Structure formats: structure tokens, C-alpha cells
Image (cartoon, rainbow, N blue to C red; front, side, top):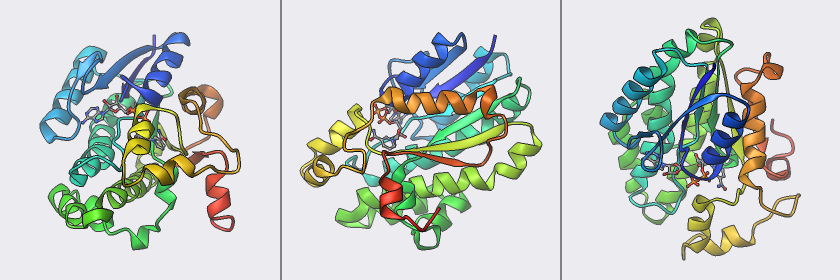
Length: 257
Ligand SMILES: NC(=O)c1ccc[n+]([C@@H]2O[C@H](COP(=O)([O-])OP(=O)(O)OC[C@H]3O[C@@H](n4cnc5c(N)ncnc54)[C@H](O)[C@@H]3O)[C@@H](O)[C@H]2O)c1
């Protein structure tokens, strides 16, 4: 039996992914702040360490898959919490669980980034240096000091840094025999998106924005791509980012890919 750990398993994309992978016969270890097999707060170093320890105990130290879905939207305050979960929470679990994945069978990991990761270039990302240095306090200061722009900066900046973190690990993870990719969704109908649409600052812009495919995605449409990337047909796909965004990235940046 294959064992796959999924963060953010209690809701939205993570829940749809857990359901799909369970239906395929995998054993899923869900991790979330509530309503999961493993309860942990991925915004703190202690919560991340608890999550890792519990995954290792319950899996017997061998994992065949990892899906990192847990995340917060741009409306969450303070903005530093967005960076803590979306970047530092994801990177901490990725790095700590690589040895367990390396012991697995044809192991693979998928990290859920966002189409927002491409909204700013790495060279212009004000969080880049702090994220790469692992300096969580400094990254938090940058976004908390940005005032009204802080939430959007925290979201797009943390997802940009997360996609870069995955791509930077392609060589080491390839050598360890573990595939690692990102999925970059556009707007998906989940509680996270709903909270953004309900926010007086961002709500109208989110509600009115549609890409070339003029609707929002269902969580199952993202889960389908994640499940494909986790599976044997994706055996040569590594270090790549897949936009599942209804054409938003192509519309915004037709010459950049
Ligand atoms: N919904 C969208 O439009 C959209 C678009 C692009 C990317 N994404 C990304 O997809 C991922 C999943 O989001 P979703 O839309 O399914 O949202 P969601 O709110 O339905 O699910 C996110 C899950 O993460 C969990 N989580 C949040 N903070 C946590 C913490 N501190 N510790 C542990 N778990 C925590 C939540 O409890 C929740 O179950 C996120 O990383 C999000 O940034 C979503």
C-alpha cells in the first residue's frame, strides 16, 4: 500500500485531492489545523515539527507521496501569517520529509502554488532574499510593514518564492529519486476564494475577474492534475509548474513561459 501525506486536507483543493487519492486506493495521512488525521498549525516552527514527527510515526518512516496544499488567502491578517503558512510551512515539510520520500516507491511530491506566483518576477520579489535565507522574521516584517499592499504582496510573493524553492530543489530531489512539481491554480471555488470575495478590499476585483475560460474551477479539476502528477504516467515530469488557470497566465504573459 502506498502512503501519501496531504496538508490542507480538511477543505477545498486538499480535501478533493485526499478524496481522489483515497479512491485510487492510497492511504492518505491528512494534516490540517482542524478536521484532519494529524492536527498541526503549520504557521509555527513547533507546529511544523509536530506534523513531521506525526507523519513519520504514522507512516513508519516511509512515504510514497506528499501534497502540500495548506495555504491562506491575501485577506488574512496579519500578512506575516500568510507567508508563514504558504512559504515557510510548505518548505519546512518538503525538506523534512524528503528522506522518508526517498525510501518510498516511485515517490512524488506536488506543491500547490498559484497563478499569482507569476504576477511578479523573482528579481522584483521583495520577499526573495528573506525566503531564501530562511529568515521568517524578516519576511514577516517586509509584508507587515507594507500597509494596505501587505496581503497581496504576502500572497503573490510567498507563492513566487515557493515555486522558486521547488525548482531550486529539482537537482537534489532528482538525485534522491523523488519527483517534485508545482500546480498553479487560477480561481477555484473554495472557502479561501470565498473569503477573498467577501473582503471589502479585494472582493469586487476577485468577483469580477474571469480568464479566457469564463468561469472558476471546481476543486476536483485541480485534484485531477495533482493526482496525474503523483502517478506513474507522469514519471518524467520533474521541477515543472503546471498552470490550471483557465488561460489566465497565457492571457497575462503570452511571451513568458
Ligand atoms: N482557491 C483558489 O482560488 C486558489 C487559487 C490558487 C491557489 N490556491 C492555493 O490552493 C491551496 C488550497 O487552498 P483552497 O483554495 O483549497 O483553500 P481552503 O481554505 O479550502 O483550504 C486550505 C486549507 O489549509 C488549511 N490551513 C490554513 N492554515 C493552516 C495552518 N496554519 N496549519 C494547517 N493547515 C492550515 C485550512 O485549514 C484549510 O483546510 C492554497 O495553498 C491556496 O493558496 C487556491
